[in-house]
Structures are given as C-alpha cells and as structure tokens.
Length: 319
Ligand code: NAP
Ligand code: G4F
Image (cartoon, rainbow, N blue to C red; front, side, top):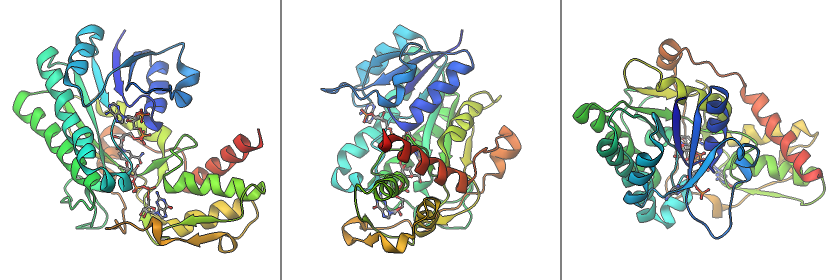
C-alpha cells in the first residue's frame, strides 16, 4: 500500500487531499502541529481512516523522525503560514515556516530516503505585480508580500533539490482555490459567511477591503487532484493550476448576495482597515500545460463555487 505524508492536514487542502488519497488506496499520515486545543474540524470525518501525528515545519528533528518512522513514498508539503495580511505582521515567522520549512522537509527527504516523491504547494502570489497576462510556468515572479517572497523561496529550493540531488520534487503553482472549508479570514469565505449571516438576520453589514482586486478562483477539491497527478508523472516539473478566468471581489459579492435574493450594494461597506500595504491587483492563469500533460480538468465552475459556499454557510448557521 503506498503511504503519503501530508503536512498541513488540518488545513483546507489537507482535508480534501486526504479524502482523495484514501479513495485511491493510500495509507495517509497527516502532520499537525501541537496546539493547546485540537483543531481537527476539517478532518473530523476522516479520523478513523488516517493517522494524525505531531510535527512542525519549524522543527527539523520532527520531520526526520516522521519520515524514518512512517516510510512514506510521497510527501505533500501543504503546511504554511498562508494568510497574506499576517505575513506583514509576522514576516519572520512567515519566512521561517513558509520558506525555510520547505528546506527542512527536503533535507529530511535527502537524508532519510531521496526516492520519496515531493509536492510543494507553491502559489500564484509569487506572480504578485504581474509581469504578463495570463501567467504561466515561464512568467517571471514579482512577489508583493512577505508571504509571496517566502513562496518564491519555497519554489526555487524545490527546483534546486530536483536539479542538484535528483529528488522527484514537483512544484504546483496553484491559483486561489476555495471551498466551504476555506478559512473564515479569506475573502471568499468571509463573503459567503457574511451573506448567510445577513440573510438569517444575525448581522446587518459586511465590511471588506479592495473590491476591485481580481482573482482566478477555483474549487479546492479539484485542485488537490492536480497535486496527486503531478506526483504520478514520469518526471518532476512545475505546473500552473487555475481556471484561466478572473473575477473581481465585487463580482463574487454580486453573485453571492443575489443567490439569496439580496443586492450587495445594500450591505457591503468598504473599510480601509482591510486594504493591504501592497496589493496584487490581477491574477489569471494559463493552465494549458497542466491540461495537456496532466490531463487535469476542473469540475466546478466559478458560479457553482460561489453558490456552493453560500449554501453551505446557510446550512451551517441554520443548525
Ligand atoms: P490553510 O488552510 O491555511 O492550512 C495551512 C496548514 O498549515 C494548516 O494545517 C496549519 O496548521 C499548517 N501549519 C501552519 N504552520 C505550521 C507549522 N509551523 N508546522 C506545521 N504545520 C503548520 O491553507 P490551504 O488553503 O489549505 O493551503 C495549503 C497550502 O497551499 C499552503 O501552503 C498555502 O500557502 C498554499 N496555497 C494555497 C492556495 C489557496 O488558494 N488555498 C493557493 C496557492 C497555494 P494549523 O491548523 O495548526 O494552523
Ligand atoms: O482571500 P484573500 O485573503 O487571498 P489572497 O491574498 O489572494 O491569498 C490566497 O490565495 C493565494 C493564491 O494566490 C494563496 F497562496 C494564499 O495562501 C491565500 O490562500 O484575498 C483575495 C483578495 C485580495 O486582493 C484582498 O485585498 O481579496 C481582497 N480583499 C478585499 N476585501 C480581501 C478583503 N481579502 C480579505 N482576506 N479580507 C477582506 O476583507
């Protein structure tokens, strides 16, 4: 039975990837960092089928021990300090986890078993102030936040361990992907949760930042499939994963509010508190390489995604 070790198991992608790997017959070892209260909400339904172990990307020894003990054939590095605004208030921590953490896990692979296949969760935030439209695997990076800078490091150290040590190390440059399991601080979930609360009369307004920012949003369940496909190829490579279309935050609001019969203009308040020191104005992917080589196709459209998230928050809050 193949064994996959997944860092970031308690996160959005960790939960969807674990589900997919179980379906494919893997033994799944999920790495969670120690906290004073457990935060297993996203993997509650999987706890009988996966093994959750303690480890931290800031702790080299824990990563070495886990690889020795569980002998994975594949490692998916999904753990990160992943929220862009926090990367300005905690830039050094973001660098330590999101950048150096990648080196620590690659070093563990190099020492314990260089045959392990490795997936790095790279990000479209690396394109930042975009140098071309749309963005593909060859587009130069211009990160606009400590998070983006850390992800550029993670990407290049992955490429370097591939080229220097022959490790099967793939980098998936994923554009924004969302779901009902998305963290409440990210804009899509903040909107779907806000819409549900307004519809149910729990609150009267939704305070947001830059409504003109444009993102290429897809469904997380589709994107974890691309991660797995990257590790099944004959050779490791870099792949852009996205929908190939872009929408503004305003458009997300329009669809989400109108889905419950409301007009976003009556409830959304722009609050400069949510503006960023430097903005990523426009992201749009060119995923043609992934479509041709991985045969990857998304199954959920942008409109379906927005409605899925609003419906899920409505159902959750009604309970
Ligand atoms: P997420 O929900 O924020 O999950 C991040 C995970 O990392 C959580 O399980 C978190 O644990 C864990 N983590 C944080 N610091 C850690 C540490 N020091 N040691 C071990 N684990 C740690 O993020 P996501 O949306 O699932 O994204 C998964 C990965 O893809 C991240 O690397 C993210 O940067 C990247 N990415 C995401 C997107 C997207 O649109 N979602 C796009 C491109 C790339 P706790 O639960 O304990 O906090
Ligand atoms: O939802 P966001 O916080 O996601 P962001 O910054 O694009 O980052 C996410 O996607 C990346 C992939 O490109 C990942 F690598 C990263 O880990 C994370 O998952 O913000 C999206 C846009 C921004 O332009 C922001 O300025 O929405 C705008 N926005 C407007 N009002 C807001 C708000 N963002 C948040 N979080 N909260 C607001 O109130």
